[in-house]
Image (cartoon, rainbow, N blue to C red; front, top):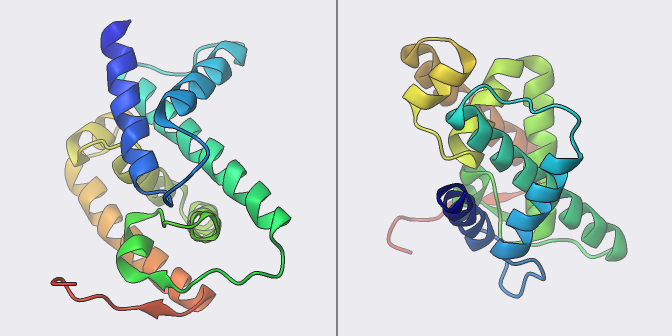
Length: 172
């Protein structure tokens, strides 16, 4: 159990590092919320360790998106700053509204091609390698890499349509 907790805490810290400064949730609270949701589920829905961590990463993303949506509802009328291209590609921004835009784009991608949506969740949000994602989805690693590349392009295009995106130089 300590190994699982440590891994989940590192995953939560990675998610929280992408959030805006002063976020009211902390990594520990995020892990605890995931635990509570796991305990509320009737049947375990994971097949192995890799699949379990991917499921936990998805739950963390849902918790953060739900939090961002509730914050956005409270602050209607305030336009969030333009989404940085690197943040758009990463899938999580520093502001809750960015996370909501990325979640909406990911939902649209999943509606068009569910496997590509799953690959984004597993690779980015779950922190899985292409090989691990291929094992979870039961496809080849090459398929995952090809779909990952297409999914990133598709998400970038959707997010650019959503609102202005600033290009950032590597040195900035």
